[in-house]
Amino acid sequence: MPFLCRGAVVTLQSTLGGSVLAIAIALVVGLMASSRLRSVRGVARVYMEFFRGTSVLVQLFWLFYAMPILTGYQFDKVAAGILALGLNLGAYGSEVVRGAVQAVPPAQREAAIALNFTPYQRMRHVILPQAFVAMVPPMNNLLIELLKTTSLLSVITVADLAYQGRLLVNSGSDQLIVFALMLVIYFLFSYLITLLMRFVEGRAGRLVGRERPRRRRSAPAVEGAR
Image (cartoon, rainbow, N blue to C red; front, side, top):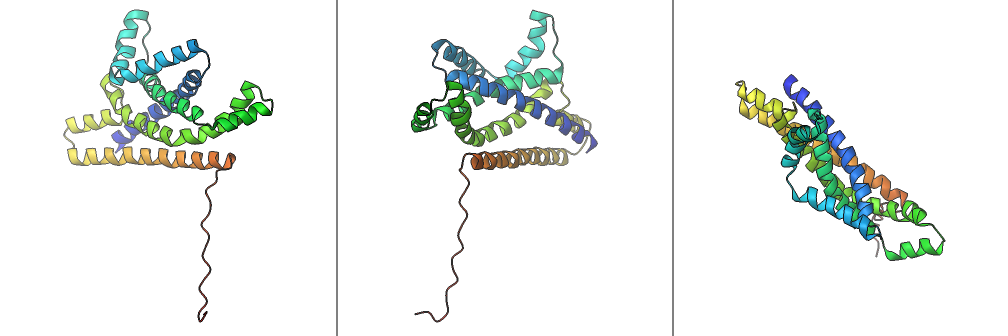
């Protein structure tokens, strides 16, 4: 357990760092993809298609092994992993942001224009709050996928959970116990992400007036009523 716990800490750090970077990139690129300027949309589309169309493992190798040859700068192993995860999952998240922004009903935009809101005010006070509620469920799936993708960081010798598990197996530990503990740890992290995102979704829904209606209790039947 001490080996697996140390690996779990590295996995958690990589997940948090990659999630922050992926969400930031997704918001920026997703809004760029919704821009009226064709050049801005073109830049966003090139980024999205490139990182979605290439393997995250190849991107990881490129950042850690090829970039030092081209630039002379060597990334830290964990930093290279976080950057690869953020760039890759950010491309998927940007499509989620773009779809959520475009899914806001046109009547909401027209009402904001009628209120003489500037484009920034329309985006800040009308469009983004409603789009954010629609972003949360697919973002939950992407963050869980990012968590599971951190297992690829072991190929560049990042001492994450997968790396420590393989070390234990190679040293003669029982494979069934090691892999079972790894499954449990990954599941607990995934479930924690799900609980957090459900809280965020509920909070965001209440802020825009989409609180779930409570069930009404039916009145008890009166005995002897005709």
